Image 1 (cartoon, one colour):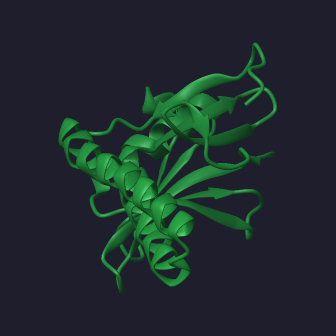
Image 2 (image 1 turned 180 degrees about the horizontal axis):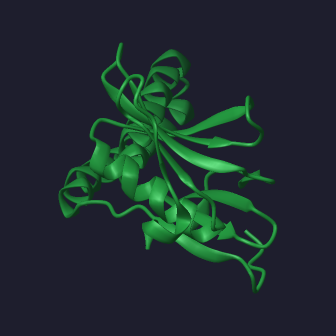
Length: 171
């Protein structure tokens, strides 16, 4: 993430402490399994080493899922939002950038019973950026993005009763 002066941090995910408590044993066991995998490769037991590599991958995915952080940077002048995912300060992927955002919405998916946060690039072109099980967390992210971009927020949680929340009322 190239920090430009007009880019500001709009949202940062906060992991509960118990996530770290669960992830620490996973990381420890993962490093022990890596050591055992190296021993198996050295001894020529390739098939067992490959099985241990699969276990290492599984352990890493589980531990990383509990400890990664998401940060959202907004730029109100360019109507741009940037998503950054990192694990202990190390980027997990290239930053995802969306430009020329018209508005932000929170939509309730009635079939899955979850809440989607969407950004609209045009009236018909939208991108789903996050899914939550409760509306409070979805509105927290959507409000922080809408405030940072100085755009309106659409509350689409009730079927057939969409409510526009103007930027002035968000603060």
